[in-house]
Length: 79
Image 1 (cartoon, helix red, strand yellow):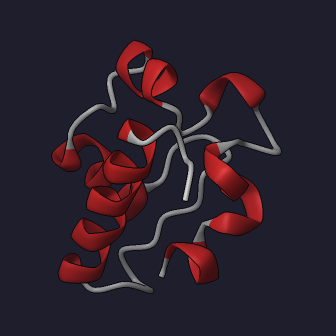
Image 2: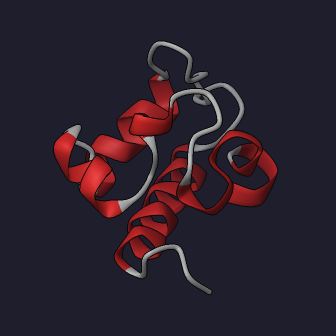
């Protein structure tokens, strides 16, 4: 799901629009998005250049994407 909906802007946890707003662990912590709930909220509702996905993904899919982001961030976005 991440590859389909998110990787276009966030390939390997980066951010092609705003480099400092990436999905790597230090940036998530600094920007207040180091929890599933916080990531799910921004995925659902969007913010600034980030589109909202609440009308495209179910609540379960949004939570799954959030959990994936946290897992990959903890692993340094390595396979």
